[in-house]
Image: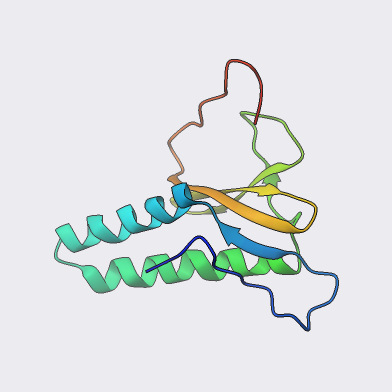
Length: 116
């Protein structure tokens, strides 16, 4: 099970940001896994979630490697594309915060007040 305190950066990696998962991203990954369990393919779900987490690991060294989320056009809100998923994350001063893991065809809702 994933926890929100997940920290991907090792202490000896100077100049890198730690990666953490918001509760919403953890729920998204658990939903992915649960869907595959409901399809009698739990191993596929486990492998897919593991691959998504592996994709996120690169953000420790390359936090700006994802594109800016087009729906928001805010430099601090970025995403990695791991078909068919969008891994949405926020760049903070000292960390990369994974906020959602959604299927690619799903559009993000832009808040009415413009706050991200």
